[in-house]
Image 1 (cartoon, rainbow, N blue to C red):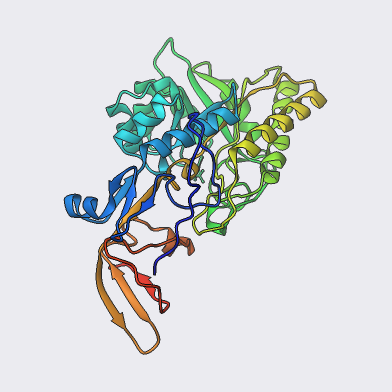
Image 2: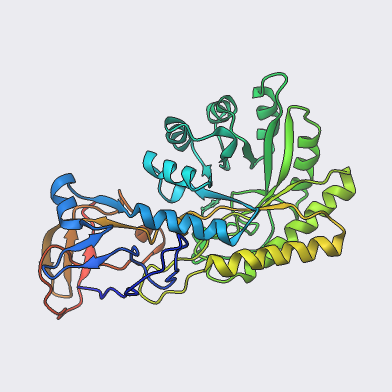
Length: 377
Ligand SMILES: Cc1ncc(COP(=O)(O)O)c(C=O)c1O
């Protein structure tokens, strides 16, 4: 079934993405009369022939524009690309040269960053259960911020830090602000595995323990409330909770933490017309909320940080599959492609929907509804 492409006929060229938040396609996608689709001027049918399928295709220029849209939205703040959305060596290099930091959440992602010489001090290492090996590698590479996500990690990390060094850490807390498109991606509430609870007192205990470890330097607090969030309001709520906690730490320990990382999760369009969160709305709203709360509590304004993942990689890319079989059952028609859960687990994990388009042959108008299926058992 062909899905129409809606593109602004001309785009300004000031290097900042003229956002089309409701468009799931890369900004350079151009349908051709022969049914092909060009992305970044390159034929998708040609890519399929040359490299095989499934193939992830990313438009570098689009990725870079999206990076710039986020850095422009949060001047003076820190923007870290969340590599879990998509990471390869080129992607790490693109975000590095756009001035973004990199958020990694496994030894594998760290290895990719290392392989392109991504500066360690610009890496944030996440994970609810980082292995001792991952922590060791992060310390050895000089990762600037390791995000403490459980109590055991504190002493473990202090032990791994060489004498004379202080490892920078953030503490991930649970702000009890739950948002996100599906229960599986709501990570700001109590009943999930990430972060340390404010309500139970674990977060306060973690702060005291980190401050008691001379090998560690607590740079700030972190939260990530969920994914595919299309409104700024949950972020504003989380920011208020987080600033309140920074003030509490100041009042209890006499320590003013310089950073506040509010995570990612910014909604993007998967289908034509889906709501998306525009960084130009998000950035100023976050800054205003943090500044107002800080003013109310007499707290210096921390340096804000955000971690967009899908909002940078998602609309900038497509996956190309080959149709392998068409099967008409009594109830529907299955069009099976040569990929599926192995290259994109999202539809099976939480019923994520995508825009599809037949490429490589002339389009006849769609006449029936079909079900696109993967080829896995
Ligand atoms: C800690 C953290 N930061 C950032 C992200 C990026 O989220 P998104 O790709 O939805 O922006 C995630 C996603 O799970 C995350 O867990």
